[in-house]
Structure formats: structure tokens, C-alpha cells
Length: 127
Image 1 (tube, rainbow, N blue to C red):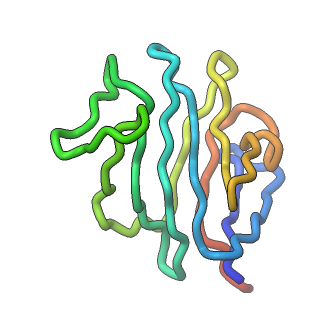
Image 2 (image 1 turned 30 degrees about the vertical axis):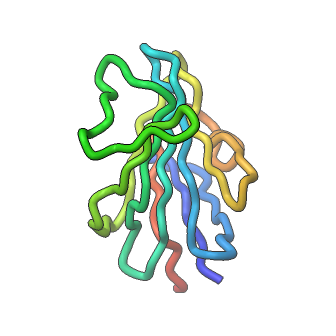
């Protein structure tokens, strides 16, 4: 089973999240439009690969691409097939925290690492 590692950029406690099928979803609320955004990701040995992005509406700075399709109120589109070694997510005390969803169960990033500092997400590697 592969795992996702989460750590605060500023240091501090780290966490591992087991991924039964190597996938997870990031979800957050756009700070201006108050609309939900979701991204599905796959974790591999060399990094994280985006699969699909979704937004429930559109607005300032979050327009879906022209090839997005509208399904049940969500604009959906495939993400570019790039593998990144890690994701760095900015956080703020003035905005709702990102949520990490595994097999439909979602928890805020603060559940895993606390605080509001930026969080690094990357594949866990055995020592």
C-alpha cells in the first residue's frame, strides 16, 4: 500500500496517510467566489500526477477551460498528465482549510498536521 506524506513547510509534525488505491482528492472553497474546487491525484514512486479537476460554478480566477464539460452542476476536465515530486499548498487563517479525501472520507489538513502554515504533500518513501 502506498502512502501520502504531509509536512508543514515551517517544520513540525509530519503525517502519513495510507492510500488503499494510490489516489486522493484535494478539496477547497474558493476564497472570493465561495465555490468548491476539487482535484483528483494519483501517488506514484516518483511523485503526484493530477487526474481530474472540478469546480462547482465559475468566477473570478477560476474559469474552467474551454474543453471542460458540465455534469450535474460541476465543470469537469482532465488535468495535464504531469508528475510532480510534491505539491505545496498555501494556507491561511482567513480561509477554510484544504480537505484531503480518501475513499470518500474527507478531513482538513489541520487534522493531520495542525496549524495554518503551508503544507507539503509528497509520496512517502521507505528509509
